[in-house]
Amino acid sequence: MMGAETFKNVERLSERRFENCQLGKLAEGRTVNLKAEVYDLPLTLNGEMDVHKLESLISRYEKTAEHFEQKGKREWAYAKNGWGGEHYAQARDAFDRAERNREKANALKEYMASGFNDSSVEESVGKYSFNEQKECSETGGNRKEKLSEKEQLMPEILNPESKFDFQEFDFESKGLERSLEYFARPDWDGLSVEDKKRIVSSYMGELTLGLDISKMPKVDIRQMPESYYGAYKEKENIIDINSRLLDNPKELANTIAHEMRHAYQYERAKMGETHLDKLYGLNFENYIRPVKDENGNWICVNEYKNQLIEAEAEAFAEKIADMMEGMR
Image (cartoon, rainbow, N blue to C red; front, side, top):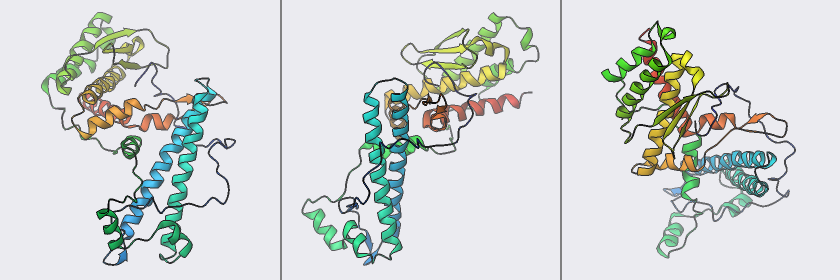
């Protein structure tokens, strides 16, 4: 996790909206002009409307709307928690952008449902022939509203692939296997604190090698509140671990693996060599933290757990946990 607290023990909360929040509400009857929104990719194929491209465009608008909806909720909660009045304006802007994208998606759906014959929707959408689009391209015209790179990549961060392959890591490493065997020892409880810390250090060394991290993070095992597990602090290159985990070797190994994956993600984000590196960096810049609403309830818990860097780190830790289970 990024920051001081891990929310593993927080129940997955059902999604809800701020029913009394009208920041994103727009005036009734506003027309949606999609003429400038349609891709200058051909929307026609052999003279017929290309349904697949329209469906892709609808999907893009819906995902963008969801992204801004979630951002609006976070900004609203930040403002209510006293993090600064500027978050109200940011929430208002996010809700407004979510509504605009949702209206665009709905207008295109109506257009498709009409069999591309609804003149009112057609006028709004702008039904270009291939020749018209070609002319637009040749004359330097631009009928496509370009999303920023951030807006294009955010769906991959908020809704990452459910499976991570971790091809860069050798889970069959003999060194890693030997270090994990210590955590599975039946006499773990009888080991001294210093012995357990030495096992932790050896284990982190194997993960550093396996993840190809340039410098092994230091570890600070100390007393923390009950709900805390661990955290990686990038600036100091330190992993904080709750000392109570010394009594739970499985959770200890799991937490270290999770935080070491964050160390790897940070290093890759700085390199910026691959598409995934870029996603890591963008996720760190737009990190989602659970916050409390005006009633003291945690919100954004699911979004916190499901964002790329957290979902991937947890999946990596679970792979390590599976290795330990096979040793018992």
